[in-house]
Image 1 (spheres, rainbow, N blue to C red):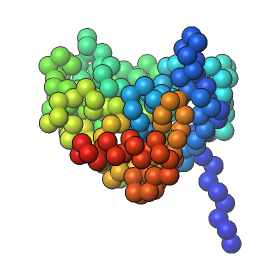
Image 2: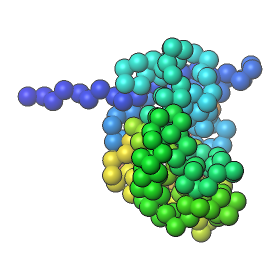
Image 3: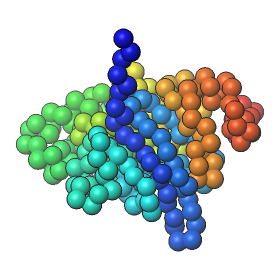
Length: 251
């Protein structure tokens, strides 16, 4: 007997985004199932980060639908702050609160948005700071940390709200090369544990080796969407072939 097809956790339908007269995203369609690790690759300016920011409602789409758990979140009756606890985000520039300690950064959303008691929020924060290897820095402030340490704290902060999907917007692009590995290592562990993730990245080896799916974007459209083996091993579109040829030359 055929198994029933799983309901996607997230569906992006006919997503369009204009900035003024410029169309940045053109009719974007894709679905995300539980446990997917989707790497979004493409040249700078292809619309990757804008797409991610639309999914998290940091940018409001011009038209289209973003359906999460069967509901279009662009319906303004939805609580955006609560939605962002289910679809969390890690930024390339960390976005930590500079006036808070590492521990306070990770406790803030559980207390203010999820209304957790402080002791419960502290336990949750400590759990995820230990997970990313930052438990010994709980009293440090962001300006006392390296870039890699800041990004690991940012990941712990995002995990502390226990999101169903975690979005990463070029999480290693602001890091020194020696710090990239420590952040990718944390992300690799999260992928192995089955966390659903959408990752905009220039780290092609990571996209090839860790993703369940790879999306290649160019000029505001999804050009190719498939398994890493399909996209890296046998790309169908000429634009994808040209982009990946540059990657293999630079590898």
